Length: 282
Image (cartoon, rainbow, N blue to C red; front, side):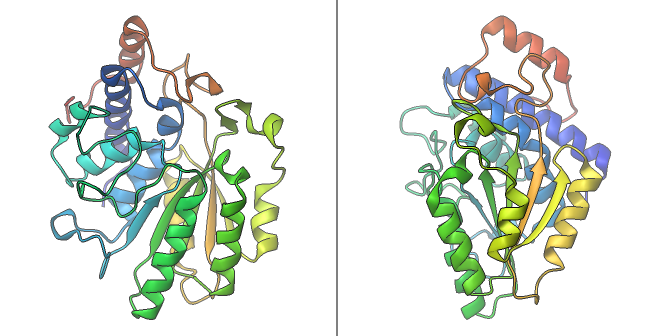
């Protein structure tokens, strides 16, 4: 288990990785990656039953994680590398032609840690429900985790998967939403007006937990409560309140950085704001 101070250092380094990766590639999605960093770092380092050295794509005997919001590969790849799934130096190949670290997760080259290709928004939760059902049939009591976006939650397939999970009593499924209120076209409230996500998931029959996506104690409590739902017959949705672009003042709270890359002088400013860590850059 990592302490909160250790988690903070890892998250800071992951945010540094995110910014350097997208700037080196001159493309990518830093905003949502930075808002979900603390959540994903907490999950991988403190709350998932996973062993990088023994990883297998069928997820037997371990927890599985599906990135439904597939454009958030900067935070996904950095977290996987920092957790030991592949060399940290490989982060420098992000979005380069022919590498394992494509703009959306791919299973073509069998990147350790990636169970499912994703990127078409809405599909990841369906994949997660299928894996969760498979674990139920195999009598495997490990969990399936799935990260969704709040903009992504406008997709009808999210709600179809939600209905499926309730019908099959997938209490081994823990989905969580990076609830930052922003998407590519602007504030989520101005695009499709999702309304009260908590009330909607509850109405579908899910257990719902609302937490602070940048407070490690709140994140820990949420994952602990979610895992305590095993045996309840209900899947769990955690709604993590977060800030797009969290950690850098000129990137925080705006949709502008959904898929935009900082200029060199902006990158320098952002890295100075984040500060360095003992982990070191790739």
